[in-house]
Image (tube, rainbow, N blue to C red; front, side, top):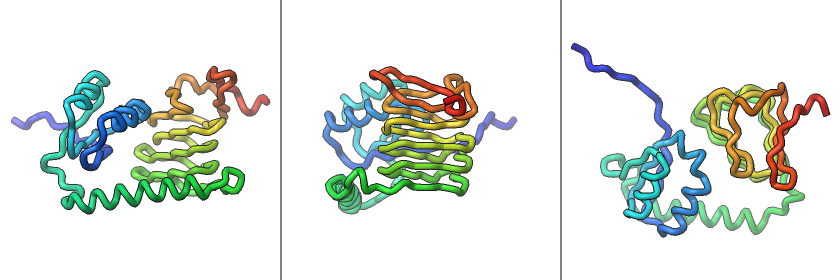
Length: 198
């Protein structure tokens, strides 16, 4: 008799090395809605972080056998490079001089587009893709991937599978009633309007 098996694709978010518990908890709390669709893999997992993850209903494992990066020095070097690049870009970037990113091609599964300026997508965003922006995001094609927007507004046509957050608020498919939805906040209150009727 054959065992019951279901093959699935899995998305992993790998937390490298040993981190400060307070900083890691703040990071996890801030991004919790996006982590619900991922398997979190930890190189090091303290009891405090483990308790938080258990109470948050997030899937996670401690990395024992998955050797993404074998060398701890290499892991540390990569983290330092990422942090340095983020700090350098934050110092150098003048918000007025950041150009918009125009994407006409299909955004494929596994592809991540992370940009500090406005992002405009004129094609479909496949399941397993990520669009993340510090400024405004406009997606005019069908969106099955994940979107994280921290800008003043977000324009979406339709979402089916992906997880969408706008300034920390989760946007679900049933909230988007229009052909083109304008999502913004007014006095800290979330608003969704039909952009074609404006």
